[in-house]
Length: 225
Image 1 (tube, rainbow, N blue to C red):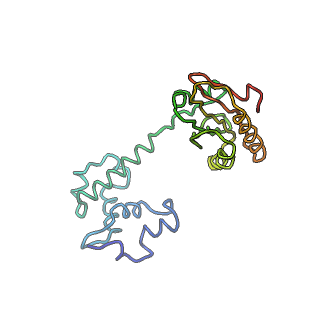
Image 2 (spheres, helix red, strand yellow):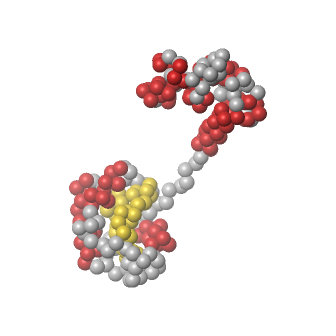
Image 3 (cartoon, rainbow, N blue to C red):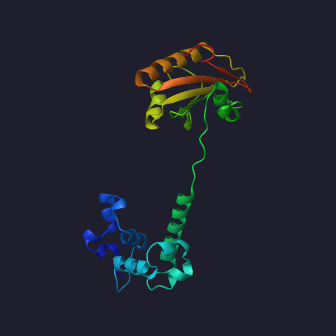
């Protein structure tokens, strides 16, 4: 059996993929990577070429069965399964439609987005929602768990993720396990610190929500932003 290592280096598709990227490989080379090995009579490139020739290109592989694949010399069950799995993944990627992103237009929208997950928590969780220019939530992340403290909830941790996600703005939220969403002085201090840091780097803090027992307080509505 001729393995990939026995193919001249310049013809090894794995190395070419790593060096140039998958878009620079031919259909034959991509299939050769899936097959991994050839047979005693032909290397993996030749086997891949024969498979494509048999099915007259990629299109007929769309509905191929394991039985059809295994009629070809050099294609056993393992190679056939690899091809079928790859074809199915391709179909699913093609058919996939991204779920509509949640849009936050008001403090109520933001609170509704996190209320069910946060109102009954027994510890304080500091959560950040990262929004795009359309105010759609592109990501949500718990930044910290524990009593809110300005020295612990550091703006660096909040805005590092915002930059990573290319967020246009953020909304922060944390819960009060007591069920009372009234803001403490520490809540207000953290909010002002995040607001100032956001202005410096150009990522606006739209609101800081405090989640209680099916109630919430918006620090923006309270005038602290």
